[in-house]
Amino acid sequence: MIENPKTIILNKIETLNILVVDDETGMRLAIERALTDYQVRFPYIQEKVGFKVFQAATGEQAMEMIETSTPDILLLDHKLPGLSGLDILGCLAKSNHHILTVMITAYASFETAVTSVKLGAYDFLAKPFTPDELKSAVYKAAKHIMLQRQAERTTEEKRKLRFEMISIVSHELKAPLSAVESYLNIIHERRIGSKLEQYDNIIERCLARMQGMRKLIVDLLDLTRIESGQMKRELVEVDLWNILDCVIENNLPLAEELSISIETKGIKPLKMTAEKKEIEIILDNLISNAIKYNYPHGKVEVALEQKKENVVITVSDTGIGMTKKETDLVFEDFYRARNEKTQNILGSGLGLAIIKRIAELYRGSVNVNSQPDRGSVFTVKLPIANV
Image (cartoon, rainbow, N blue to C red; front, side):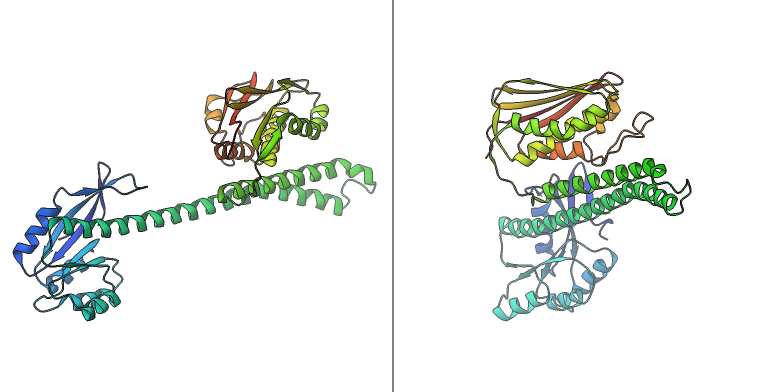
């Protein structure tokens, strides 16, 4: 009986079960000897692949074994007493078994080949054959199976990731939508009076929530475009200081509101080959975070430097900082530190994840050093020349 489950993983060796169906005992034993201890490795697949061989002398015995436990590969003799190889193929074609069949025949003909293929045969092995020819046929069949499984695993992982992302986005949007709905009901029912100015604070809260939702949607679209390779990129020479000046100007109102100073240092000009929008995203996320997670009257410092063949962007703040556990997770999708210091700070949880993806596009890096209540230092390293 063939062992279950049909794929066995031991010490990172994935075992495929092979059922040899041939009425010649010598042929069955020769195939088993040739494939004993035979292992192969395929590109993009970590595990080695080995084989366990089972034998059936007749078509009837083979069908019983298949029904009991389905093999991965079937080495099927065309001419058998009782049920022939083609009969077995016909039965399998009507079943739900997923078996890769290699037909073994000494009576190969065009008609036989056409019929076998129509019934689902994957390959042919003509008698007599050498051990190397046998291994070549098994290698090809195993490669097909492993790549197919890899594709199925990737599809399943993508499905789970998509479901996870939808769930997280739904959760992140649910709270602000509920808040805005509650505020609008207060305004609609005139609960705090009939004067418009009495509702200014509520309107400001609604606008802040809407801004947070818009940020989440924009970040999510950016992340999706980057990972799908659909973000339009035009790599040209850019001056990082020109981009930095624009980003600081956009973030200045929030900094002034919190009485936070922004200082810059480094060599001017500092040029590199890059997509301007991507550098804007990096600087904007780092600087806006340094402001949002800072203390009132704190400081943000941005340094642009050249070190050998790289530009190094460093953004430091005097803010609330993070624990070691938080810094280990901070570049994960949708991660946000949840504590009493961050509960009123709006964010999508995607900004730093996007920075990491962009840095990877440039074959660069991003890291963080942080201490609670002493601030954080984010460092992005990107090669000056990019193709």
